[in-house]
Image 1: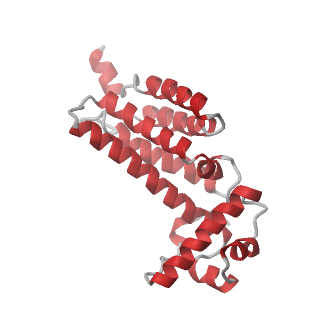
Image 2: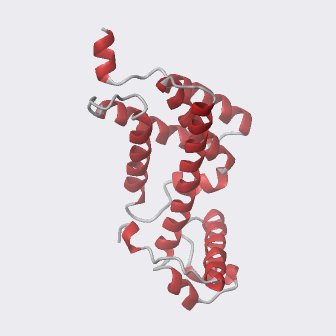
Length: 208
């Protein structure tokens, strides 16, 4: 069975339902961090949450669905971090697209470092079948939105640039979360500094 975001059950709107769902997610995060996704069991999650197996299946389709819900929450926080960072920079007068890309990439890496334990859940290679390909695709989507900062309306998408930046971010996140804070932030500085020098093909050809 592969990961399918369309299989997520909608969150309940009642206060009790929301509280149960939140407790199950918190418990799943704890169990996945402790024993890994592959070794984790639904029974461990419900026991840690103080819930029942029935309540888990009321909100989620199973262990993989719990994992994906945690990832969606994480990715939403990461998107909000990068959006806020770019918005703050624009409000302060920054308009250079290269600098904005640097700011977005650095905000994503900073978020990964701040949420190191959670980030490791998704970048350790221990997830549901099909998750790694989806992780790459989501990073590619995130990259596409940020590379758009480089583009004029009539410029085509530079597929090579998308591949390089999204691939670099995938490797970068995997590496920074395995280092201590100071070393991780130095590496994040170096990576985003290099990324900030990249330009799409149309602009390189025009400059040449």
